[in-house]
Amino acid sequence: MRQGRAPHVRETAAGISAIEGYLMAQATMRRAREQAEAFAGRMLWLTTGQREEVVRQYAADHLEQSKGTLQAIVRCAAELREEYTARYEELRQRLLRIVVASLSLAATLVAGLAAFTLLGR
Image (cartoon, rainbow, N blue to C red; front, side, top):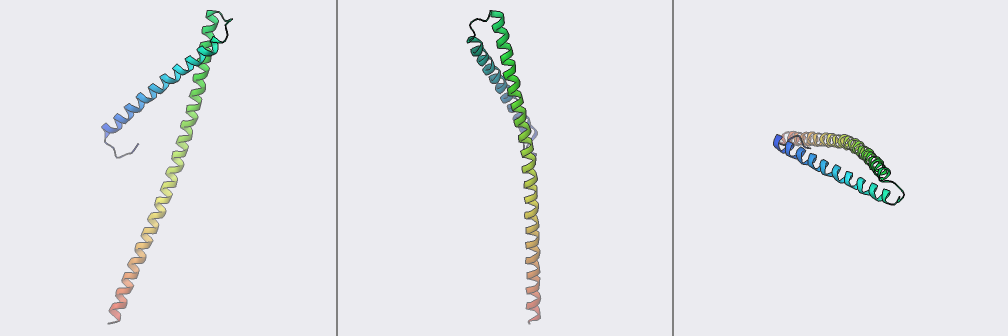
């Protein structure tokens, strides 16, 4: 998020992100439960208690796997952000050096031209 934003804008964005995160978590849990129910539904020989335990374990495993995947994505995104930030800063510094060198060269040329013009009179 950009540093220059007003506090209320940052708070609103953080609130929206929290809501999005909550909704995504709920959808993931619902999907895990649905998949667990479908999996256990294929095992017609299970008792009610066994079926509930299979559903619970399957859903828990699914959620743990989703959590691990999400954590890996977050780590990767943070690494990429650091890499791109460093690259951006490097390019920005290079551009700044080029601009300063160009302005110095232009100033030197103008001063030389002015001196040449004054000497030529």
